[in-house]
Image 1 (tube, one colour):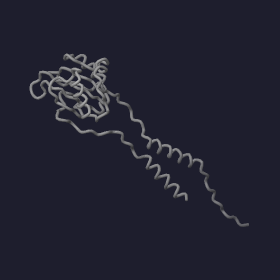
Image 2 (tube, one colour):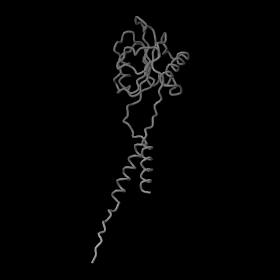
Image 3 (cartoon, one colour):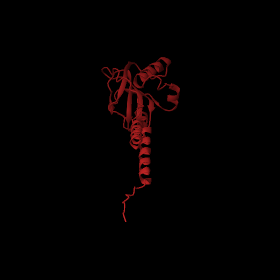
Image 4 (cartoon, one colour):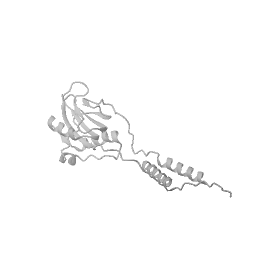
Length: 195
């Protein structure tokens, strides 16, 4: 009976200790290079012709479509006025404002750039970039030629890991086993004595 109970407890502990995965994987890059950015983006969507960061309804619809390609549909809704009011829109090739914006970006970062007068396929196009886990302040432009506008859609802070429920359950089972072992009486060996 004891072996059965121990076996059931071991199976329950192993079952509870299996990891839970909350990550949703979405398709990789969609036709654009990582651009003049360091570190290179994990995913990108673009190039879309012209400046797509004006706030007009057709531009906002294209922004939403590109963001859906990167992080999945329904995970983010573009609210241009809220972005502008929060200071997340940088325009007019203002590198100081861009550097201030990038200095706070960390964790999962989703940003869009417009590249203006640049020779080659990067000229007068817009692109969207996603970093899944980047230290705050580490994203920077490696070449500012042609930079025109930027919009920071998402920036989550990098947090330390929280143990999963299975880890907590296994830890509690371990504490229970230690407590049980401490409470357990030692069997005294009975030595028969004959007089």
